[in-house]
Length: 377
Image (cartoon, rainbow, N blue to C red):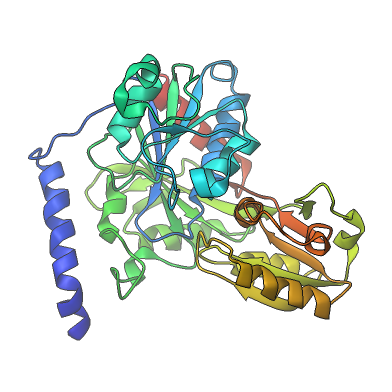
């Protein structure tokens, strides 16, 4: 009863806000080019960045879209910069945000831009001449931007003023939305039934060998009836047909972060792990197959590493002189912002590359068809 009283003001605010958009009382805008929104209804941890990267790989591998201008638009969570910015590979995570910088470094041919006002950001990406002439964008560091042909919207599902061509919502396999609570008691930042507004639902962090029976059970738990694993489709709560897919995490062998790194430490038996992400359990499971994790440091998501943090990691490295030091891709960009990292850490520090993929080729084909049929209209 107490929980309901605490959550009621937030619940009522979300209910009224969504109703105003659903009833047309608040206006929605569409971009001039196709837009693909990747989002969720929870706070972090569902894998938005690796799923955005997966979509970019699909676009870059497609015969019709590979040679066109692809853009990613993000707000750049916890960045120090303001207003519209184009991310450059030589920039810092503190200025642009760790995730946008990671995407830009992995896909240098893709335009990665930051703007909290997504409507304005899409307008700038479609009309880059405005970036070069408007007073509002005078602080943009790099204004050499090609006009976008398609825009991937990172974490824009709650930005309802902009209507995306394709809405993709992610749900964590280990954190079902209908078993969760709204903030601040739970991790939901939006009403769980908002998943029914999406065109595509993806259940993330699944076991690679998930069965069709497990998928059907999951579909039922999400309120999706008549789920067919061949068509990857079922009937949503409101009677609308929805696509439902399942993806899994794939880690690669640790890779050096710094040029001074000694690659022999990859073969160490022990490892020191430090992370600043929403949930590091899958990574710890992966590393435990090859390493004994002798010390672990867990920071908040998007944590900016301080001198004290580096001293603690350095002390752990001194105590474990043969251990590798391992972190995530996102954390690697933030630790590189630290200007005076000891050489001892640089030579032993590795990141673990991550990708996501569908649990089988059939799902990948259906998703690909859904994606390209939508943006080619």
